[in-house]
Length: 216
Image (cartoon, rainbow, N blue to C red; front, side):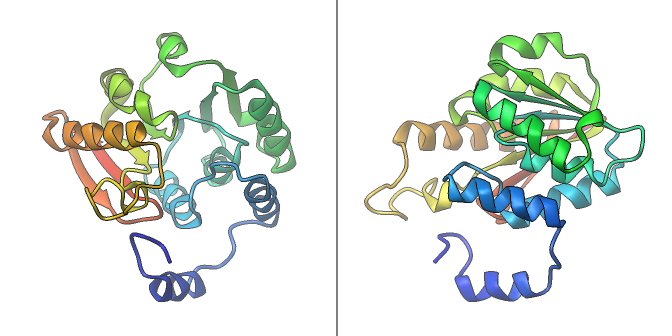
């Protein structure tokens, strides 16, 4: 059972959402079979809706993995839309490029291989949407730079902010995840909630999503 939302509720929600895309379904299945960290299906749907609503012409993603979330967003972008996505693992970045080509969106997604904390200064903003799904211990250190890269009214979406419920002390016992990551997410959530530059709402979507709008 999901630690955040009860399984019967998840099953009900799943019945009311059509599949995203045949190629994306294949990419997702392959990634899950290899036990790779992919966004939850509900989070993928949420990202797609945001890209369509903004509209998200310029998107920055931290944590490409195998390209699943980038492809989800790129498929619903305006024709002139672009995505810059950063991945620290070269092998995963190579797989991401292949998967983006399978989805037919390789021309609008630029995969940068490297540590976001070292390469972020080379990326020019502003962005309509930033999706933070990289190293949890880099969430807080990167926050100021990501906010600076957002346009006024732009949106920062952060994944895994509920960490399967482990951000609530004692809720999962014994802890199943790295306690250093858990502590880092707790600190980040506190920063988001108190940051005067952002209007933030924490949502129980997938593994927990923080939705932060940059104030004018």
